[in-house]
Image (cartoon, rainbow, N blue to C red; front, side, top):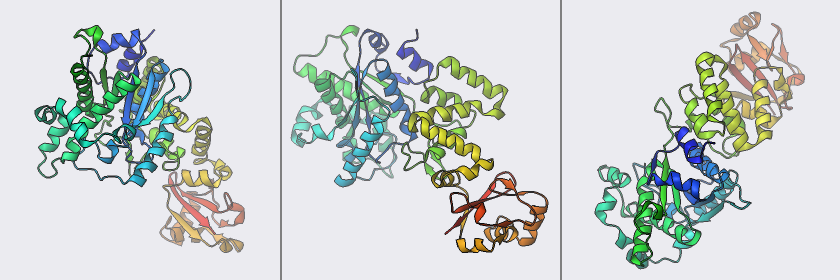
Length: 435
């Protein structure tokens, strides 16, 4: 039987660990672990899938999860991986984002049962800590030399244009204090995060050690006695060097209100062959053996895109549910067939969100609109003459049905009561919207 740690290693999820003893301890006891999420938005994007799903893997293995939303640290911003200072959030926006993040996280983690996950706000414990108290109790345990040596700080210090403010410089201490509070109040003994969090995680472990030493409760220096650990996962990047989760139309979010299930599904269907094996390991709960079969399919029959379709199905089901996956797959099939007429308005507009469109008064349909006129008017064809040539050649489709040379558009062609889909060739779409 594969252990949790071995499975994480096989998937390439383990980047760094503060102590190799962690692998042994994970088999001996159930950990309480945490990961932090910045409230820069009211939901998370696909870039947060890896930490979220890594937490889920731990929970499925019986460990207890704490998701920390940074009500306090989010007001400052983590300098890790950033080249410039973040904009500070106001109280109203911060509270809105915190509520949204709680909702998002709870969709991935079970909030019930013996190892129910909890979502906490670090603003709750920072609220009553004065600046003087923090300097006295926490700041004294860190030297500036130690802090400057951290990669996230050093990189910004070397950037003469932007530098780093004292506010962001202090972020490391705030995150370290999070670990200390959770260790004391919740018995939290493991923190996970992206590899850019390594300095913050190790600072937390050091603070716990020093705080315990100061009051005489530090564990003895032996492997068995070490009681706090850190684990980082790689930062997700694409093989071509472009940023994961970004498209020409914007960020891919985990919220259907910001990124529709259809757009989400299509994002993963379009994954490059070189990226699919890694994404299957990171983001799905398929076994390594199943993933290796899909990797072989990429080599032997890449045109079938079996691996991409599996990735898209697994993630759409995980993020949006089976019903949305079914609707999305129906819409995908309809885009290339006459089933397009059966789609509801919401699904139709999702499917054709990237297609150009033209608005026309519905009254024009009463007398019928010569299709050649509509093709020229929308720019799908350069002129009425060019439109007639394309019609004669059989290259024009109305609602995915090949159009006759003398075709006209009428109310009987409407989809969802308001739309007609024109297509030239295999992939050039134009949506007519009538009102």
